[in-house]
Image 1 (cartoon, rainbow, N blue to C red):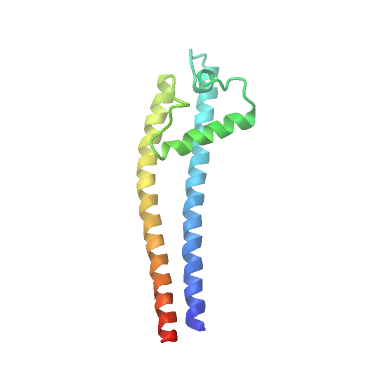
Image 2: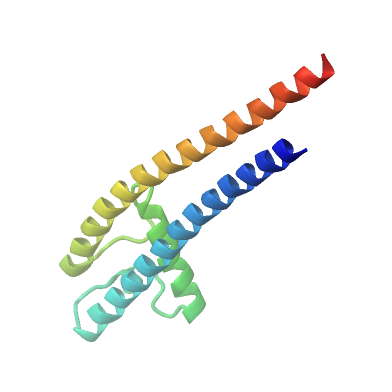
Length: 137
């Protein structure tokens, strides 16, 4: 019984680590989205000819719609970007290049971490299955 509780405890810790990793991704995506939004507002205040939400038909969108579009843009950067919302001036393009590089590195680390955690979870499950098989025999 104690060994079974220990396996469940280890499994719970691994699932919590997976959840924590996903929370880090969402937090980073939120921060990138806020910066992307702020960059659009700054471009507007600087009277630049174009800025991302002017050219993507979100100029008249409400606060929630712009935030969701910004969050969508930032999450898309983790997989290589998107065509729906694109940088339209050199300030936005520079930020996008930096974000793509950052997201590439972070994605590689996250995939590595998740692979390791899922492998550990699989090993624990397999060990438990072997123990049950031994009990049945």
